[in-house]
Image (cartoon, rainbow, N blue to C red; front, side, top):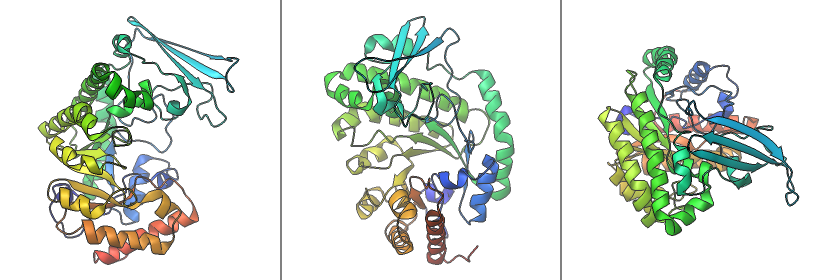
Length: 389
């Protein structure tokens, strides 16, 4: 794995699932999840802080260290029934010394959090009637919700990491840390559609919002990377930093400076830097390399031109992916799975700098999905000359 991340050619291309929700849901602990991946023959990684199989918290979509409010923040929640709305509306107010941030979210039939509105969660975005951040006047209050990690959180992180580091040492596994965040958090607190418009209509405000988030993100990075826990790879989530939401020009202006600062910080601590982005970013490949990214996690054959990606980034950025998780592994045929493994290894593996994985997750735990995972791993082992597990 370390050789692949360094764009070197190992004895064989590793296979490591970026995410494997279907298996994790069957485990009772994070350690069991790692052990069961090893039993399948995968090049598992140990992710710190660990994300247990069942997660229910206010920041569900942001893995990693806890997100702590300033102790002076109070939270008020209620449900209202506007006459012009089909669904009840959940109201959540964050009351800070610099003002009130108010979120209003429609409680649709498929809402997963009961009568509660979490802080950072994808479910909020399409159901939001009002986002907590609406303009420059809200930034001082937002700082009270994005505070630096506390010393006791660093101590807790080190304590939780100990047994898993021993697991990593015992099996010789890569240790990853994260997740970092940037524009994805803008989507949660300001709205993705608003974010796209602001790149043209309110550029100064959008830049200030991303800078606030970036500064907070790097405080979290510094604590995790400087806690005395050896992290091989730091990962930043960036599902909403692709060209569905940004043009190359706005990406260069707003995303590139923050991404470069994140990668530089990881490198100063001796860690490699991973960028988790899975769709519509072919026009950004040179900029991603320019930022100092070591590995792109999310090279989806249904969304990427594999050959063009290899040509542009060969020897510069490691490529992690090669097989589609949802359409191919969860719903395709064994022949389709084997064909995508063949093509990924043929195009991306030569010369090194490649890690095979479904993109971006295998969530379903069906007989079809489990069978296709077996075909994926089996075909990979055949192509790389390994003995069956």
